[in-house]
Length: 224
Image (spheres, rainbow, N blue to C red):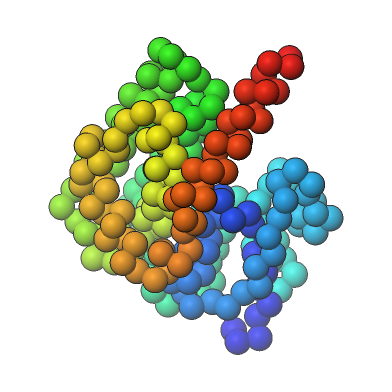
């Protein structure tokens, strides 16, 4: 597949976009990266993802694949080296279940914690977030990775949020490591891999970006 043309439409701070970058790095796939604006969406993005009009989008030989977990699965099935999903059907469905859990819980709760909730509502979102992380810690157990001895599908789904943790903690005033030390140890273990450390954004830049988002959101709320 040396002649494949692979392009990624993405945004630097997107944790779901980082999933795709990690998967491509794990597979050693060369690709063209095209940074996208979330406000002024490019004609190419609108053409390649006319339904949701969102990043990330992987374009493989002219064919678009959308939605991050769908893209990671596609990458895993197209480039067979360093498999991310288990071959056993039961273990495979379990991996997909927990990756979907990350989308449904971790991804969705971050917005409430950081800019849409205050006071008791923020505290409730924070508690829900920690409870979800503890469930993930339980699933990790004593394994080095969710994938067992090697980085797997759930690891790729979850670890990009690590670079957002500093923003979560600062803006919502809590410590993830104090609550979930095993999960933070897992994050640090993942960061020892080049495929992860080179794909994740700088937490300080993420924090600055998150602060700008909060200001924009709260200003728009005042104008309603």
